[in-house]
Amino acid sequence: DTAVSQTPKYLVTQMGNDKSIKCEQNLGHDTMYWYKQDSKKFLKIMFSYNNKELIINETVPNRFSPKSPDKAHLNLHINSLELGDSAVYFCASSLEGPNTQYFGPGTRLTVL
Amino acid sequence: AQSVSQHNHHVILSEAASLELGCNYSYGGTVNLFWYVQYPGQHLQLLLKYFSGDPLVKGIKGFEAEFIKSKFSFNLRKPSVQWSDTAEYFCAVNGGFKTIFGAGTRLFVKA
Image (tube, rainbow over all chains, first blue to last red; front, side, top):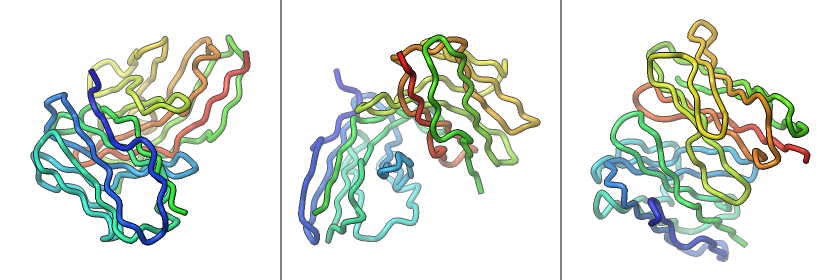
């Protein structure tokens, strides 16, 4: 059984479009995260939700909007996509607090 | 503010060589420390972690790391690497609020 799943795995789109990435975890965790990994493999946190409440919101353009309909899901919507948004986006989850994070397989976004 | 520094960006070793990857962090309080590994084309997974207790922690696949509080370090070691250890290795630190990842070290092991 997949613990943290993301869809889609690959996303190729034109500049200016709006797209969404979905994430689901079946681990019963309270906290979920979105990370962006750039071409140099640098991993940067974007958002974190705990029990559907936003607790971390890093310096991310407001074109990026996370939504957590319930504890098991954290989706990422991106408006007006730009070339610089091309990256791999990882979803992760953990128990509340500084615990081990479990990562999804990643979504490779390519903006043309 | 928390920060994590991984000194080696690229490491190339031959099989059976010993490995040590450096990780230093800056944070004055109690920290939880992690090493994650990302195999080619895969997602990150936990290699080992330190929360408290014995500062020498053992993880999966023969890896270990030593927390040296006075040096703010948490270096990763393996006595004899294998070709299958080729991957990106990330050190991560949590000072209670959020986890900060280092820039990663790309390890390539020659068969």
